[in-house]
Length: 125
Image 1 (spheres, rainbow, N blue to C red):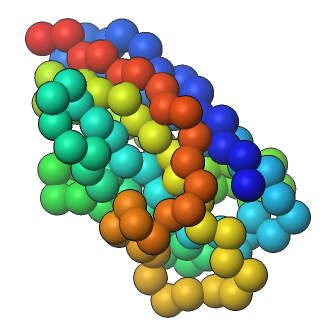
Image 2 (image 1 turned 180 degrees about the horizontal axis):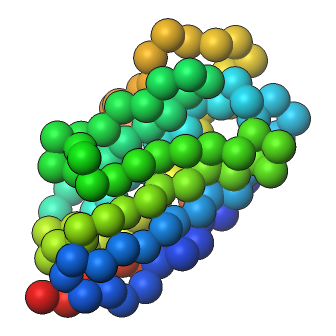
């Protein structure tokens, strides 16, 4: 599975960005897809994830970020609103190419064998 994240950039605090993650593969609709981020000097952290029917979010982004997917285009999105300086970092999309459906999206990065190269989001205060 190949993943390509895009959409990062520089935005002022309070602004919005939309990230995209394009994936290869024939059974994308079953993939569990996740977003993670890594700020300078910090460990990679979970942002949110989506499976075939559900989404989960980290508490730090709940209510501000929304994950969606377009299975026809093999693409996942991360809509980020009300951005603040703490959201700055490299955002990575990840995938687990399951060929069956699971009840709840994965939240641990160990559960994702495939990763994109990341896209940088910088929020200026």
